[in-house]
Image (cartoon, rainbow, N blue to C red; front, side):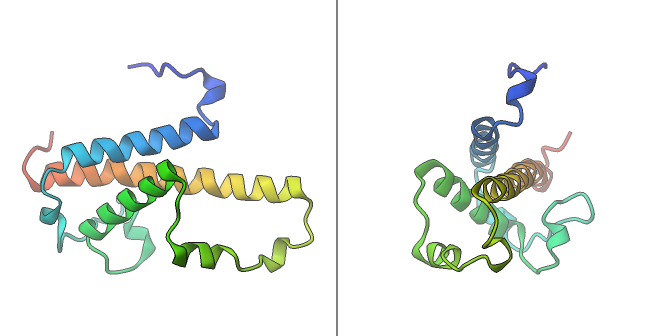
Length: 134
């Protein structure tokens, strides 16, 4: 199936956010019993979360992906996260606004693309857990 988005819009922020929220929505509709993901470790190496090197199970990633999606859609961040973002960025403090914008936009694209991939991987793994793998 060909993408309906023009090539120049594939990397626009709105399209990236839309792909992410769509992937998480699909994950939520597919995963009817998220508790089945408890104590299921990420597989190596194709799972994007396995590279993080912590001991989270797939259920924790499921909750994290939903939480981030809620922040993206509502624009509201939990107070703890807002406090963490208010800390000064010493290395970029003297940069011009355009440089700061590109730095943060590049990071945002990277994080959203990783989260979108994680949503797809988690959905696929859930299908494997319940026996619906292709």
